[in-house]
Image (cartoon, rainbow, N blue to C red; front, top):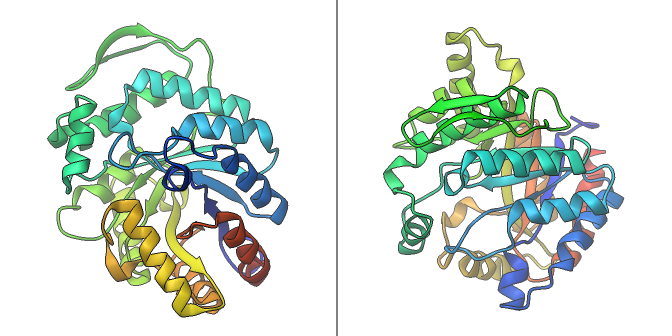
Length: 321
């Protein structure tokens, strides 16, 4: 933590520029926002991921541009849908971005949803059977860590099969790029804490309340102890969505409209926010810090991202510095 709060990051609008610009997005806004964040003293910048369900700029390519245009701010994916990719190509791409950024990359990865028609079509488009998403992610993490060790990798798994493969170089960070796994509360997520404890360098959560987040962290810690791993090795990151506006009603209206455009529906409803209320945003960050978040990353639910960044720098950051 810095000062009296957690590390703070922002999500760069790789989908937002597509929503605003269609087939001619303002890709330069990504670099501009990253520079604004670095100049303001934000700790990290993050990008989301989707192939065709939520069209956006490709995340690791975008972070390569950010790496070349900044010098301090850390970078991450929030979250990468790893199962859409082959692990050798993903390991190579991530190692390249980590080298270009001199060790500033974190890969937060998730299994990804298959709840909507668009999500199901995304997996089908990539040639991935949706029921295999979780086991693919587990194999991908194992393969990438092996490749990042610098030794040749032979792997014969359920989804990937190859012999004596080496990248020829390693990431800047040793032993490799940190990996966070999406870990949440809720039905059907019983395997997530054990997976995170066994495979990851920490967790990221997007939909939990502070109380649920604390409970998930406790479960991950229990699973870590069960395999003789210290819970202190694991980072905890929370991802929240806000709209900063002195007019709370206007902020909520824009925030709800933006989220609906983003997902095609108001996904997760009241679990987003707060909208409009700066003090409410500060208080919610503090609640997640108290629940154990080492870092809180903020996505702006707004069509005017630079204005949101300005409000964040002026009204939110000083409360934690």
